[in-house]
Image 1 (cartoon, rainbow, N blue to C red):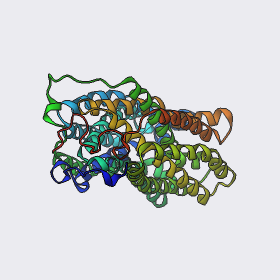
Image 2 (cartoon, one colour; image 1 turned 180 degrees about the vertical axis):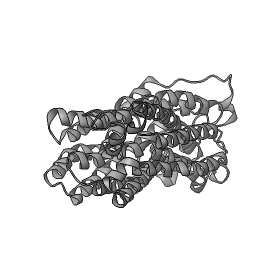
Image 3 (spheres, rainbow, N blue to C red; image 1 turned 90 degrees about the vertical axis):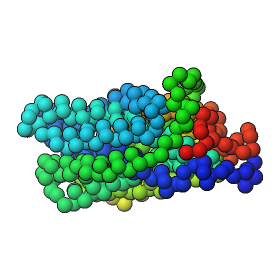
Image 4 (tube, helix red, strand yellow; image 1 turned 90 degrees about the horizontal axis):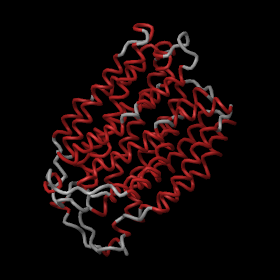
Length: 440
């Protein structure tokens, strides 16, 4: 069936234009900036909270604390996700954003180990738990909002804003790290420079809150009714969703680790290492939108499967090149190449899962699937990469870890059904998703 054969839905009154949903993207970017900035400053944070005089495993402890932030993501996904299915998407997004703003401010202002001793890492863990809870509750409501606001034939493009804005956060964190590492010496970056990157995110929180409070509500009144029967997430969708998103998130956090990998394993200076984060964020941001457009045109499965196969073939050779030629040019080139594949695989996977879930449980269902994948698989990625590298002595450990995860994800992508309206064998005119009002 050709896309042009499908009657166009009444988008003039039924759906929001893309420019009107930018507020969701801005808030999402800030949430992920606040959460992910920790990863890029893991080396500096380890010096501040886990100094060499207190432990010989400072970086491992720092990466483990990054992983702690994932423990509360399923709880946040359920609590805030259910709130989004009952009170509306907008209310849930405002709540998650407020919590993230409080946590990032607290983390940035936490005194060092030298100042308050063991209470420093305790507070660090506490604020990471709050961050995880907030971010767990962000993905479900915001993605539900995007797909409900989109015309059916542009759902891929609209939902691509979820990952495009996440990767805008990666770019901003990379630029902040690159600027600070060039402006400050190593001692200043360890002592207080990394805190500036966190405070930059905290400073924009009031703007994000104001933008989100002015959003329309996309959840229909019928779906909000407390006594209405609520469907359950199909087991098949949940299992395949965790497999697909788990592989995607392992790949994503594996690529985010390249800044630390370049410093710790390739012994590159911090300013050059942060350049890899800039390349990663910029490449992903562009390709996320491309993935959404391509999945609307050609279908979700062809795009994500092609990308995963390419990644499986390229990850190990890419890491071999970086290890054998540890230069900025090689690291940046490999980062960009792998980022293209990661973006083309991840976006269509998220869109597919979202389209498979009915509106009354979309916020909590998607949030829970995403959070479980992130907690069980994504959150442990950077710790496992460092641990396996230390245990085996191989700098290629990250590559093999990512390859196995991607192969498992490819199996799930083969088994899931195609959901793109343009490729649907069902009705010729794809209307709103089940349970939607169809009008905002």
